[in-house]
Each structure stands twice: as structure tokens, then as C-alpha cells.
Length: 441
Ligand code: NAD
Image 1 (cartoon, rainbow, N blue to C red):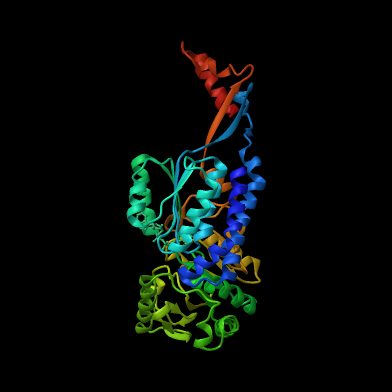
Image 2 (cartoon, rainbow, N blue to C red):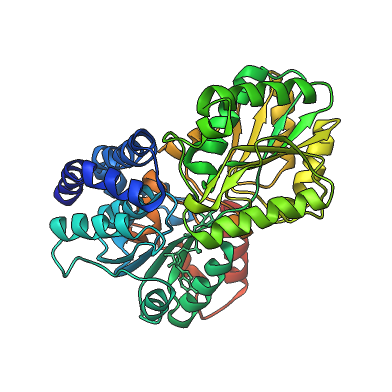
């Protein structure tokens, strides 16, 4: 608990350094840092500080009739030395978040922040080294090579946040030492907008979820499935909302309230994917411009994007938003199911029945109705994906459990000798007795 409180104090003290670092790394607006890095991390820390005692308490379990005379509880123990490999896109939140849970569970840890945001990773190193003694935590800076060396060590638990491709490497490495793994991966989070939706609200929430951090968010709306009846009206609202947020012209949008793409290879990947979609028949409804000199890609809306375009096959992870037309919730479900299970699925609808239908029909880590991104900061809801979007759960109590081993403690107090009857010398009475036990279960 004292470490968590010290971590919170160190994080708050480093606020200016964090803002400067993220501005240097990819021009992340300081206000966005306030909301999506500082505040979200403080939420996670405060929640753990408040609930840690209750998470640690042994849980009493009920006793079945055939174990009469015993009692059982489950205790939680730290898994042991853990490795945390973090991504760059929310460097602070996604590095400090798992550290909160490893610390809460009592695990010493090694952390490797991302090489793509070097300034922020350096601030993280300073924060961790100011709070934890070396035997409890160490920070290794670097990229793939450093991660590979760390993965060869026998950690008890591996917590990885990043792409599915690297997630597979982490899981393979974990198999060598039979380490448990939590994989927080990404994917294409779809957004269904039906004919009853409040379109202003939908546009506002979608633009917030898609263009904050310049679309480089694991749960950003990846593409929209819009009901044919409101398709045109939704496009109009989206364009109005982007202009309101970032400006009416390319020059205005090329301003300080909007993050840049993190590194040149990511910028090139996005521009190539945009050109690929256009060459396959996509229409640019809004934006489409970029400036390679400072890795700027303006908020972009596309229609008529064919299923074969790279943008519809891979996670976009940038500020390009394809809007597709569909005719029913059934068609939305069918379309979503053609791709691997997404980390999150968004629904905009006034019909409870429509969103229930979609939740029931889609395999996904979370379904979020009439808003975006907020599932991430709901600390009581376990966060994670399925298959390609992840394995295991993080945040709040789920994060604490991921770094803990459960130990069952069963104590015989009196009686409970019934099972002793099922021992040699075997006889017809033993058989009769076992049949009786089966009936008591
Ligand atoms: P990435 O997979 O490229 O890198 C993540 C981390 O893995 C970095 O620290 C990197 O140094 C390390 N790494 C890279 N290659 C490695 C290798 N061969 N062996 C071992 N480690 C290696 O991901 P990224 O670009 O930092 O982040 C973007 C991805 O992360 C997106 O797919 C996004 O959806 C996903 N993501 C998921 C969540 C979540 O909570 N589920 C959150 C943020 C990002």
C-alpha cells in the first residue's frame, strides 16, 4: 500500500516532465495527456489503494454435504518475479497500470517500456527508480533485442501489451518456463450505428474515440457500420464534428490540439494503406491529407472501402475511418464475425433490443453502447480481449488476480469421515456407499 501511495505521489510530481516528454515524442497535446494518461492512471492507482485490502482477504467457500465437517478458503499469494512489456501509445497508463497490479499483488517486477516513445520511457524509469528499491523493481530501456533477452529469463508471469504478432512471441517464450501470461492485444473494434441512434451524440463520441491520440488507441473505433437510412446524415455529423474539434481547413487541423503519428514506419504504413484503399475504389469524404515532415495525417473519413483493402483487413491504428453501409443488425453481426474477435465493439442505438442482439451475436472483450473508450476506465469491469485481441484480464481486481496465485486451504474440523468408507477392503457396501455419495453431490 505504501508503495502505491508513493507511486501516485511520484507520478503527480512528474506531471510536467511527462507532458514535455510526450510532446517531444509525438506531439501529444498536454490536455490529452491530462485526460488519457494522468487522470486514467490516477483512477487505476486510487482504485487499487481503496480496494487492495478487500482483494487480499481470503475468500471463504461453501462446503458441500459430502464434505460436512470441513471448511475451505482461498488465499492469494504473489506469483513472483514478473515481466511487464509495454507499448508506446499510452506510455504512462499502459506501463504504470500493470505496475500498480504487480505491486498490489506483491510481485517484484522488471519493466520494459517502449522504444518508440523514448522521452516518456525515460521519465517512467526515473519514476520507478524513485519509488522502488532495486530488489523490487527494475526498468530496462530498449527495443526488440532487450525484450528478447528479458523473455529468455524465468519469470513467473509475463504481462504484455502490444500487437498480436509480438504477443505470439511472448507466449512462445512463456512456454519455455511455463510462465503464465496476460496478453493485452489490439484488433479492429467495429462501431455499429443503427437507424434510431442519436447521430450528433454518435458523431461526437466516435470522433473522440477515433481521433484522440490521432487514432493510435487499441480500442479506437476502427470502422463504422452505418444503417443505410442514416448513413448520409451520419457522414454529415462526423464532418461537422471533426471541423468543430480540429478546424475547417487542412492548416487549422495541422495544429497543436492533435497528436502526430509516432514514428516514420507507422506514418508510411498508414499513407500506403490510404493509397491502397483509394486505388481499390474508396472515396475520400473528408481529409485525406498528410505532411511527412512532421508525421501529420489529418482526420480522414472514407466510404466505399472494399473488403480487400488493407484498411479493412488489418487494425488501422491511425486517424483513418472507413464508413460502410449495412441494412440490419444481423448484417452487422455477420460482417463483424468475418474478422478475428475485436477488443471492443461499439453500438449507437436507442433500441435496447438492438444492442442486446449485437452483444449476444459477437465475440468481443467489451460492448459499449452510446459512447466510446469509457469501458477502459471502468475499474470494476475486467478489461481484455479474446484470441487475437488478447488472453486474460487486467484492471482493478482482475489485474490484482492476474499477478496472484490462488491457494485452496481445506481444514477438517470434525466428522468428514464419510469418504474414509470408500477405502479397501472393497465390498458391496463400499459400492453402495459411493453411489450414495454421488447422490449427495
Ligand atoms: P508492439 O507489439 O510493436 O510493441 C509492444 C512492445 O513489444 C514494445 O515494448 C516493443 O519493444 C516490444 N517488442 C517489439 N518486438 C518484439 C519482439 N520481437 N519480441 C519481444 N518484444 C518485442 O506494439 P506497439 O506498436 O507498441 O503498440 C501497438 C499495438 O498494441 C496495437 O496493436 C494496439 O492495439 C495494441 N495495444 C493494446 C492495448 C490493450 O490494452 N489491449 C493497449 C495499447 C495497445
